[in-house]
View (cartoon, rainbow, N blue to C red):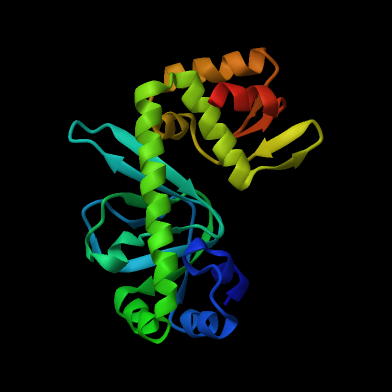
Length: 225
């Protein structure tokens, strides 16, 4: 298994190699095809998932059927960590956006490992604090930011995590449909498409199939504030 990917994950950063090796021995590899649903909102579960390659989206469905995309996760990122401390029903649906390789860790195995490596608990608290901070930021954006600002911020966030250099900018292969991108920023597809078209007309980005090329990072960053 990929020990380096586990070491680079926030939850296990700074843990010594021997402890990481013991942890990896408790984890199980899992491969998902694009579009495969890993678990559904309301399902029971007690596993944490670490993304080795590919992308996974987390979403929720409102009582009226509307869908909201909470986040898109890639290599080195984790999800399901809340279930390790309070096993119960899943609060979101996880679906592979592309072919994805994961490592899974069950609640009893984590408890066993923490018993041998109690200092790792501080990392777990840090990961949960980061999750809470991100949730607060998202709520603030929905209240105080307009749709173009939220679109710009989402694209900059995706660029930070998935972007790679292109001949004329930064290629962000987010692999999301227009509807999924709209769900990610909490707006209608029409409004998000209008914002993207405006950014493209200004020369800030170029639209591609399930991707964008950011051409003017400074202006995009300024619009995201």
